[in-house]
Image 1 (cartoon, helix red, strand yellow):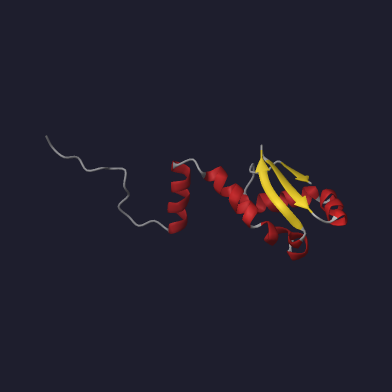
Image 2: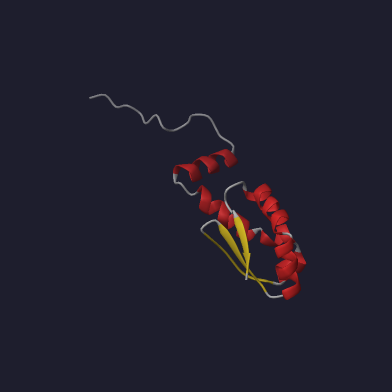
Length: 103
């Protein structure tokens, strides 16, 4: 019986970013990673003023739910919802979030 080495491993070195993406794809964790990336970068997307008045943030059924503690800021965000969706798509990719809900 002859031993056949495992052929699934690549011989050349891969950049860390591509290796990480391949790992996420192999374990089917791409969507969860992108959701967590979006939640963690919310302050970077909207700025310090809005981030300071943001409470709970979570994603359910491709909707981003954001608790806002200031009424005027909530109204302003509702009016600029489409602009925020474009910023989100630029940050984490298309298809992660389809709608925004401000609570």
